[in-house]
Figure 1 (cartoon, rainbow, N blue to C red):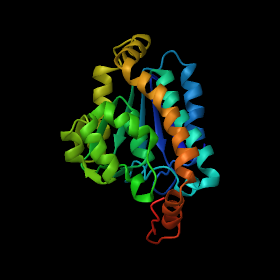
Figure 2 (figure 1 turned 180 degrees about the horizontal axis):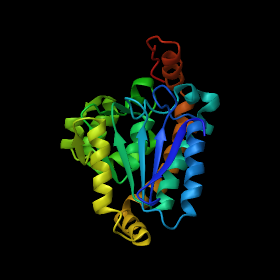
Figure 3 (figure 1 turned 90 degrees about the horizontal axis):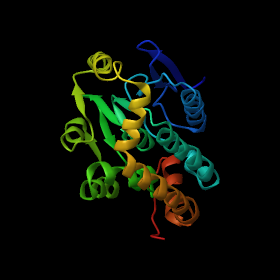
Length: 257
C-alpha cells in the first residue's frame, strides 16, 4: 500500500488505519481506494471489534485532494469518496478517529463519520469548502445529525476552523489529551477496557441500532447531494473559479453565478 498503513492490535481484534502520504495525509483517489480495500478485508473478518483512523505525523488530514475537485475529475473523486461513508455504514464495526493537528474538509468528514472522536490539544477542525466555492456533501448530512442544525449550519456556511476546546465543548470530540503520545496511550487503555471484553457480533448490532436513524438519513440524502454537487454546483462559474483560484494560488473572482 502506498498511502496508508494497516496494523492490527489487541489480539488482532482492532484494525488501525494510518493515513500516510508524507505531507498532509490528503485523501486522494489512491488513498481512498486503499481504504476501501481494507474495508473488503474487514467485511470477511468476524473477529474484528474496532477500527481506528489516524494521520501520520502532526496532522490527521488536510482533506480531500483539491486537484481532483476540478470539473473533469470531480465526479470520479466524489463517488469514490462517498463509498468510504457507505462502507463504514455497511460494516457496522465501531470506529474511532484519533485526531492531531489539522482535520479539515474531507479529513474532518471521515473523522465525524466515526462513532468516537478522541483528540489531542493540537487538533483543529473545519469544513472550509465554501471558501473554495463548493460544499461538503457528507458533512452537510452528518453535522446536523451530530450537532443539531443551528451549530452545523454556522460551521458549514462560515467555513471557519475551530480549535479542540470548542469541538469538545459542542460535543463533536469525546475526549481531549495533552499530546499525541498521551492520546495513543489513552485510546489503547479505552479499547482494552471498553471494546476487548465484548462480542464482535454484538458490537456491530449496537452500532447499527444506535445509528438506525443516522444511517437512514445518510443513505437517503448523500446520493441527492452527490447529484447536486456533480450535476448542478460544478456547472456554475464560481465553483470552478474557486477551485482554480486555489490551485493557482490567487484570490477568486466571483461572478455570483
